[in-house]
Image (cartoon, rainbow, N blue to C red):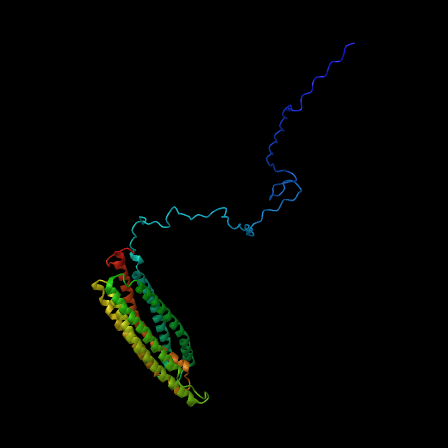
Length: 376
């Protein structure tokens, strides 16, 4: 019988084992694919699904981020601060080359613009004088029966005089508008006082001074006349004829005195103002066109005096003792002096033509301005 074969010897315990196989690498994550059904990306409505969309991101100001934790003492900040060094200076030290500024055009001169404003002022002033003459003519027509010797005032004439008292308010408004335009004209002359040399500036200073005198004296004289008229004695007993007559006689005297005071103030200052204005205007006109300007101060001297003379003359006509005259009718009779406004048409026409001629000479270059010779 054959004996069994011996078993192979076992390896010793110290022999190394074969290395194990490495695990397989994980697959990369697939790109996000937005579902077409029940889901959708954040902030968008679901497409064809029933699930609700997520709310959109918040808008508007958000609460500030929480402050970082305090740094332990002895350790510098994580990002050290360094001083900033600008690469460029805050300004360019060399001037940038530019074209020289162009001189202003003649139309841009303030004096030329003041000529336009002065013409507009004369138009409004002429309309005011024309309206004053119309009111005066109505008042004179109402006084025609008194001129023929009729002492009593008829109802028709009394209605006309009462209408004159209403219409004279329009005259005051038009003269006030002309005064506002005159102030605007003087303001533009003041801005352009240096455009035509030292002589023009001196002429303007004279015009400015005479304008202030005219406003003070003529306005003050008109205020004094109004105070005299308003301070006329009033009747203590309106049913007593004697008291009414005394009241009307006192009003007559006040109206006469007020007309004299206003005429004296307006005549003197009007002559001074018109003289200064024509002297300034002569510089822009050729010698042959300066002669008509000499009539302007003369007319403006006599227009207020003629107004006062007509007012006083018509105030002598009413017979107040007939008990048909009232305070309103007497004041309306005093407005008959406005007929003198017709005489003001002559200087207004002369000044308008002179202003247009002066403006044309500046625009055509016949009169040179110092502002056109140097940069603006």
